[in-house]
Every structure is written in structure tokens, then in C-alpha cells.
Image (cartoon, rainbow, N blue to C red; front, side, top):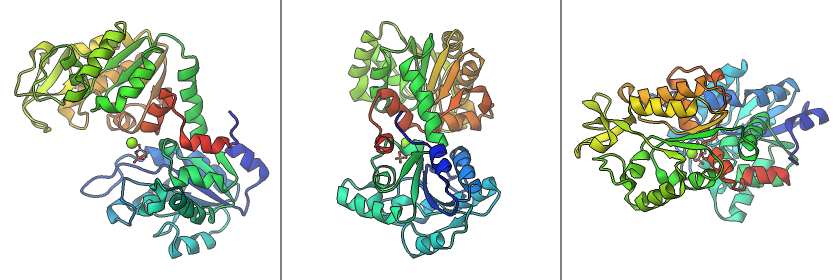
Length: 399
Ligand code: 3PG
Ligand code: MG
């Protein structure tokens, strides 16, 4: 890889220099209290930030959070993240209440060597996500003025052609941070030369989100296990009735076609947990997939499916998992996701957990993170990497 790394930058010496770090601090927040419910993405950038602090850099961190519409919106403020980041770093993080305005300018100007500042949400500015090159460029100019060098450690956002990801590195000496390097190293082993059997588990709600990666993976994998909300469109494609379960009608034909072309590699659930409603306390039962009642909806895979999927996972040498098997946030519908996660940890395989939801599931279910080979911080980014797409954030570092 022709990408310069954080170590190259550190070797040049960064003491007293301003280093602009793009991080992905897009963490889930509790809807009521606004509290951070999973700080995994904050912890994931600590190695890069810690190294810069120790080397005496003035560290200016920027990130997006959620999808605000190009203007300040308090529910998407990074302010709680600044607090948590400071706790984890063991030193207060100075927070700028705007991204490139007066507060940001004075915060950056006042930074001492080895201090860290966090700018307010990048997406409070139209220039960050604009499709217009000039508009993005103008915002990138303002951001780039805060750094003498740029570090991209926002793996979760490398698939976005946004100002802070794509245009800023064109304006400053740029390197990949520790997290981005590790993610790319791991994912490249999955595409280049996975040890076999290579088994992929896909879940989550939408087939349409996963279609491209299923297409790209089918020739490569030995087994593809499909659960989660998207399994019902596949079951429908097999001619089964799915009650009121999640169904993407316009994808049924595509799923049928994929099943026909899959050479038996695709494995679908044989039983599911069906409920009267999408609610934590809804009455529920386990049924065979050919016996889903017309008025009920599937919210998890059943125990026989867990057993079958576990048997397929057990001989695997490489595993990639993206997407929960059911509505794991509700205890009544968490057994499928937990069972599959446990089967993955038991296999004597190099296992990669791809993405926001599945990584959050691992932690929410209290599973030991260290029993997985790698937990990616990027959902969309890791899928697009496996699809073989060019990722704007990585391409920008290569130049
Ligand atoms: C994510 O959560 O997937 C990343 O932070 C990217 O966010 P986005 O999908 O809103 O660009
Ligand atoms: Mg996403």
C-alpha cells in the first residue's frame, strides 16, 4: 500500500505542530437522555490520539455525528463526545462550539503542545457533504487551515466523498492513522486470500443494502448464512408465506435469482421467532419457516437455525459477520444474535465483525470483544471495501 502512516509522521516529529485528525465519533446516543450508549468508536481512535499527544502535537479532532442537514442542530452536538473522550484520554478535551467559526479558531489558536481539541459536528456545515466540488472545497480550505498535517482515522467514513475525508487530504500532508491501517489490513486479508472454509453471516433489516456485497461475495465464500429482517424476502422468494414480517417486495425476484445462482452456498433459517407486534413484551412463539401465521411477524431466528448455522460456522477458518440475526435490543428476540455470536467465537477461525450494529450487539450482549479477531468500526465502509469499490477516503490518502 502506497500510503504514508502515522509512524512516518511521528518520525518527522510533530512536537508543537498542529495535527488535524478526522475521526469517526458517530456514536449511538440514547434518544431520551442523550447519553452515549456505546463508546466503541471513541475508544478505537485512542491509539492514534494517544501517540500524537505523547509526541507533543496540538491535536485538532473533527468528526460527524448522525445526519444533521448542514446547519447546527443541538441533538447532534459532539459536546457529550468531548466529555467522554477526555475521560478516556485522562485529560480534558477542549470543545469548540462551531466547526470553522470563531470558537474553533480561538480553540485551535490557544492549544498547548500535547493538548486535544474537538470541533463541533462537521455536518453542521453544508460544505461537508456537498456534491458541489467548489462548495466542498471552500469548507475544506477552512478546515485545512487548522492543521499542518492531516491524519485520517475515520474508517467508518472512508466510503464518503466528503470534505473532511476527501478534500482536506488534498490540501495537507496526509497519513493514515492506526485504526484505518488496521481495518484495511484486516479487510484486505478477507478479499485477497482468506483461509478456508470462509463463512459469511449477514443479517440486518434490508436486502437492498446488502445486495451488492452478496453479489461480490458469492464467488469467494464457501457458505453464506442469511438471518435478520432481510431473510424474509429470501424466504418469500422460496415461495413461503412470511406473515407481516419485514418484506421488500421488489427484491423477491432478485433474491430468487441469487438463490438459483448460489450453488447451494446460501443457507436460510429453518425456524423463526414470530410475535404479535414489534414490541419487547409482545406474545411470541417459535415456528417452522413454512408455518409463519399470516398475522404475525418474525423478529428473530429460531434455535434450530442457530444450531444449523453454528454447525456451518464450526469448521470455518475465516468468518465475516455483518448484521444482527434479530431485534437483539429486545431480550425476547436476542437469542439468535447471541447464539450466532457465540458460535463465531467458538470456531477456530479468524473472525471479523463488520460494522456499527453488529459491533454494538457484541458489546450490548456482554460478549468478550477479545474473542473476535477484529471488530470493525465501519458498517457501510467495510461492506463497500468487500464489494471491491474504491473508497474516496483511502484513495485520497494514496495520492
Ligand atoms: C456510520 O455510522 O456508518 C458512519 O459513521 C458513516 O455515517 P453515515 O452513514 O451517516 O455517512
Ligand atoms: Mg452507516
